[in-house]
Amino acid sequence: MTTASAHAGGRAVAHSSSKIVIYVSTAKIKGVGTVLVNGAGRTLYVFAPDDHKKVTCNSACQGYWPAATVPPGSKIKAKGRVEQKLLGYTRNPVTHEGILTYNGWPLYTYIADSAPDMARGQNTDLNGGYWWVILPNGKVLK
Image (cartoon, rainbow, N blue to C red; front, side, top):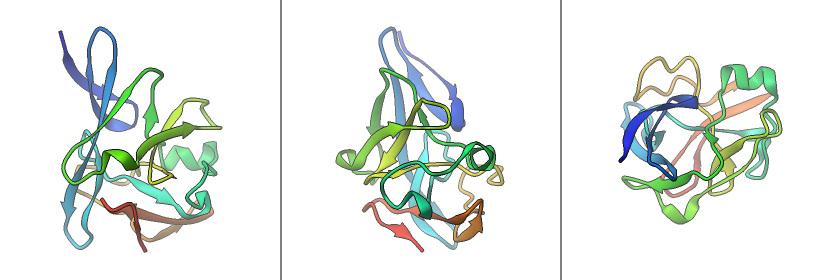
């Protein structure tokens, strides 16, 4: 039996007896283009100081930019134009949980995006660096 529910970071996930499935998809955002979104339709961002390598957004930063968490044993699935081979995860040094990555970039949502298909955080300089959306090809939109 599988049921769907919301999970930390606003992602829609499917629960089954053995695994949690986290979906990453794409959405066309007005004025920005087609970008990665979580299962709840929330825009996913990268943080420039992470430099395509590791989580540098500290606990105060993650209060505004919640990391896209990956619970232990989860399965990450691509939808839309997302490339499965670019999906992964790394360890979040703030929460010690897994954090979703795309093409090596740790991914976050933004609390000011109050609804799906919003990208208020795009190209903003907050919490120690710039925040950008990520495209399905794995490149960031600066």
